[in-house]
Length: 366
Image (tube, rainbow, N blue to C red; front, side, top):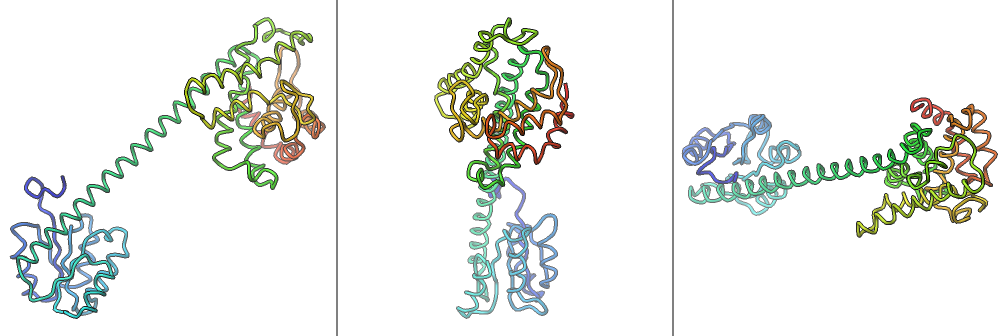
């Protein structure tokens, strides 16, 4: 450990005094145990303390010309680079008020002259031991904080990869969707960022919730893995029976995520949002959607945002059964759906930033 002087390099003590005899006396007293540096002025002391290899402890006289010991101590404690160096005042000032002032400035001890060598050695040893212990604990805390941060990043990376892998699995079943997952992920984040300032949504949206929304969005169509190929890949419009089967993907997606969460044995916030999105992104504001036929604010906000993003992307993209629609025509359809298909305030936000969404669509075009 850092305070084992027997096996480690000697610790450094800086002695500050404007009297040469005092510097010589303290150097002789300390040199067998410590590496000693000396400074005959406050300015010189501050320069040495602020160097690349600062001292481990400072013995500081108070009565010095130009800059006295109190001011030196104040400057040391005001500087982030030197504030942790323990300072022991070594002075002829014996009044209680002087000692109190020194300790209030941040000194760890106060020794009056004439000094007793055993007392000086004992106190220097004690405060160096305390400093070394503090440094050791600080290093340990820094290591633990770095390790926690590293493991948190690792868990987040595994989480993100797992989500994208599952989403890609659904995407491979439906080869028309291309970059649909990526585009809708950015649509919902851009929409949510804009909605965060809306008074109606301020209480429901913050940066952490938007991050969860962004991470959850790729799972909105995960239930498609349970839809038969004959329906999922049909090169044309679905008949009513086929469409009823296709509608089941929202329930299948919800149940798959819910089952995984239950197997995990704990509630995971981003999975809770993923369930909302998978289950409810085909619900409509007027209650005419599926699978539950709920409407208005009963539809989770995450799913209402996803609904706008999902429909916009479906309109502007090519499918085997339709040509891509121009951006202007697509946003007109979204606008016409306000209050029936979509939450009208979300449509207003969509219209405000529709050019940003067009740019996302172009960036991640199939």
